[in-house]
Every structure is written in structure tokens, then in C-alpha cells.
Amino acid sequence: MERTVRQLANLVAGSFTGDGDAVVTGVSSVDQATDGAIVFADTKRAFDRALASAAAAIVAPVACTTPDRPVIHVNNPKLAFARIVADLAPATPIARVIHPAAIIDESAAVGAGVAVGAWSTIGPDCVIGDQTTIGNGCSIGARVRIGRECTIRANVTIHERVSIADRVIVHSGAVIGSDGFGFVFDAGQFHKFPQIGDVIIEDDVEIGANTTIDRGALDSTVIGSGTKIDNLVQIAHNVRIGRNCVIAAQTGISGSATIGDGVMLGGQVGIGDHVRIESGAIAGGQAGILPGKVIRKGTMVWGTPARPMDQFRRNFALVQNLPSLNARVSEIERRLGTNQPSVPDEPTDEHNR
Image (cartoon, rainbow, N blue to C red; front, side):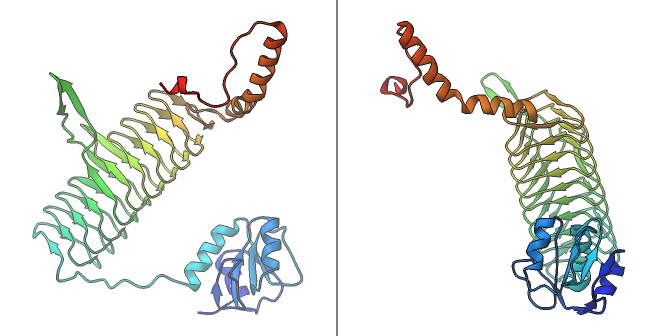
């Protein structure tokens, strides 16, 4: 597919400088750009790299201009580029058919234009909305509700009584509605606490591959609209996540945690049970938030136990200086003749016993 720079600028509601009739034939990263490709740059440094490439045109902020190349100017280059990609390299159309090897219970209600892949099963009393796609090998339990224009990739498991709204994407291997980790200890053994709640996933959520979302014990586990969840994330029972949150890979969220709107969680963040993270807060990668803690609105935390970023940086700097501080203290003690043992540089056999 081909577009002119002028056509693409109109598509993204931007302006352009340079030759508006220049033809763009594809999209590319800066490193792999060839003649005819369009790339994006969201910083001055990235713009300079784009200029050094063979790209035919660049999507960039308003302040970035050059006489050497057509430039489409927008406020958010990455977003504009995503729209250009969708236009120049659209996804392969999906055949709106139900495969003969799919098993659909006679009581299920399947909407218009639904696609169901081979070896997928749809249980009793399910409702599948119009134009939704269910890939190969999926298991959809009884009384599941899936809205319009959803995409359920191959090998997804959705257990009974899960409710999924419109335009939700669930990637392969995800499990939604499994039992939460709830047990009661008595007389020397663990007894399972009933996990009879449900899962509610609102509009425009994306759930990454091999992510697991447990059903509530007695109530609901809720994922708010617009939230994006990476691969390999664990969300425990009764967790409530707000709207437009971003949760990176290998994050674990323990039971009954509450997360507000617009929260950002970096990779490998660990959140204890009954934690409350207020709207707009950010937890840096590998932050550990202890059970019952409250992270206030707009706060950025890091470390374990998680602390506000300024405090974490001060503490980290002090820890880095401990070896030199130990040497100074040892020297002072030597001069004073106190003969106090210093901290050894390496563990001794005594420490390992």
C-alpha cells in the first residue's frame, strides 16, 4: 500500500514540511529503514538518528524540522506512527467462521460475525458478542460473558462466570478465573477456603500471555477499563485494579490489594495483600510493597521495602558508601586502640557455620 506524506499528515491530523507528494510505501524502525519507509522520532536525539537513516519521511515533534526530508509534525509522534502503521500495514483479516472442530454448547448465545478456532470449547449459557474472535484451543467455561470485538488468542482458559466487556484482548496462555490461593489452617493441615467469586474485566483491557487472574473468594476481582497488563503477571483473588493502569511483566499482586486509576507498575513489582496504591502512583521495577501498606496518590516508589524515590536514592547512596565508611571507622578504632573488630570484606568460615 502507498500513501503520500500529505495523505498521512491528514490521517493523523498533523502538519508537514517538505515534499507533501513524496510517496511512502511502508513503515520501519530507524535502524532498518529503507527507501520508501516512514519512521518516527519523539526526541531530538532520535530525530538526528532518523535523519542519518534512509527513511523517506519522519514523524516527529513540531520543533524538529529539516530541509532534507519530509517531516510530519504532531504532538505525539509514537501515537501518530501507530495510526500510520495501522493504515499502511493492516492486520491480516480473520475469517469470520466457526471451525467444524469447535465445540459450542447448544445453550450458548454466539453473536454475529464471531470466529471460533479449532478445538475451542464454549460452555453452557455463555454469551459471545458480535465480531469477537476466539482462537484455537481455547476453553470458555459456563456462564462466561464476552463482549463485542474482543480477541481471545489461542490456548486461553476462561473459567466459569467470568465477565469480559468490549474490545478486550487476551493473549495466548492466559488463565482467567482460576481459584485464588485461599486456605485455612487447622489441626495440622490446610483446608481450602471457598473461591466462589468472579472476575470482571472492563472495556479495552489487554491481558498478556501466560498472565493469571484469580476469581474473588466471595466477591469480585476487577480490572478497570483501559488497563494494560503485560505477560507473566499474577493477579490474586479480590484484587481491584482501576482504569488505565500499566502493569509490566512478572509483577505479582497479592489478594485484596486495591490499585487506583492511572497507576504504573514496573517489571517484577511485588505487592503484598491488602495494599492500597492510590491513583497516579508509580512503582519502579522490582519494588516490594509490604502487606497493608498505602502508597499515596502520585507518589513514585522503589526498592524493598518500597520507599519514595528521593528517600530510596539517599539510602542507596549511603549503602554504596558503607565499605569506605567501614574502612574509616576501622582506622579510627586502630588509632584509638579500641581493638573493635571491623566488618570483614568477605564472609569467613565462622559466618558459614
